[in-house]
Length: 231
Image (cartoon, rainbow, N blue to C red):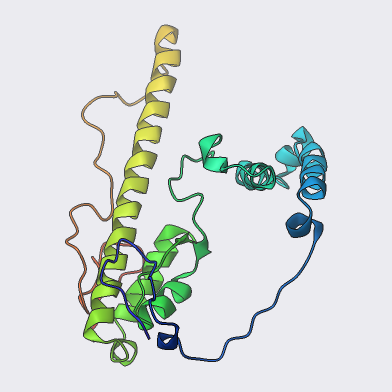
């Protein structure tokens, strides 16, 4: 199995086809979405008109993320790069990446590759699954030293993403609180209301965590961390 030296680039250039060994099974499915661009564009436009409906949004049947995905497909069907024209409704920088589970990421690492993609499950659950793996000696013994390093580097990137997410959520909460205070400022306050002031509490969670390398555990303050023996 061919590994990589630059973990920032998950792609590998293979100069000799004999370096690839194994048996592979591929399945291809044809539809108007991948065989006829004109028909695909028409179908996606019909879907857009059907799904962009206030009632569907109110019922939760359609979400901004789903409309974002539909618009991406529509722009792709026109032969253009979607990210030049639209952005994720959550301003997620990884919105255009493929979604991978923690199991997918671990499997990629076991084969010597740095995982490429955004977390499929909520980020705290993704990190928790990585923690369970690192805290289980029976699992860790299957990793080579290089794979252990890849796992540590990947875990560190997800911890950093979790920090940024918590900080963003805290900033939004502070902004909402400030807006409520501003709107209620002319009403003389409410009886028994607690005085506001002081610095907002710092974001809770993974701030200050050192990078995780090899079999080192993630910070126990993260969701689901319960300590345990290192492999």
